Image 1 (cartoon, rainbow, N blue to C red):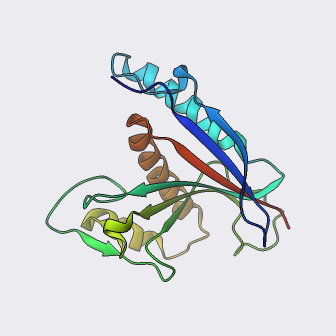
Image 2 (cartoon, rainbow, N blue to C red):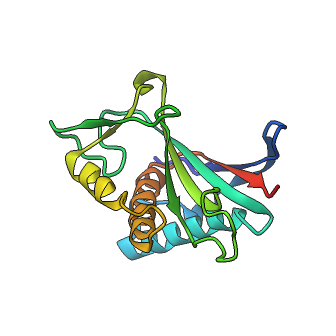
Amino acid sequence: MQSMHVLLEHTEFRYPQSATLVDAIHIPSHQLYHQKHSDSENENAFKSFLAAVEALHGDRYSHTIVGLAHDTKKCFICDKAEDGIHMSYHRKGSNQLLRFGPPPRENIADIFAHHGLYLEVYTTNQYSDALPICSDCKAIRSADCQDYFGPAVRIAECAMAESIIYRQWKKAHDWHCCSTLNP
């Protein structure tokens, strides 16, 4: 039986202070995955859940990061397990950031700063070196890296992030979102 007590924690970060808990919201039943519901009902529930997560990020914050842990040897993007799994390394550890949600306002001057919504996928201690990624997803990410700020890259990252969030949403995990205040 699926747990009906899924929690969405929202913390706020203002450098150099540590993050403080702003709110802990119990996700309502109509925003959860139900196996007995139709695909369209679950799709509407997911859209409602995603809208609630996106609503946490407002003009007050420069960026909001939704964090989740990937702790299997399956591809962190598509969840496939295959022989051709590669390890995706990042210079600051194994974490990977994927943009999703509405794009930031156009009047933001520094395009290299984080603005908007991001999904941060990280590993647990068991898989702390790097995140596994399959050949197909690696090829898509490599092709998209040509112009990081181009619309095609943003669309691809949003699709990947929403796919990852959807799979985790179906498993009814608790969620943590950390918003950083505008300096």
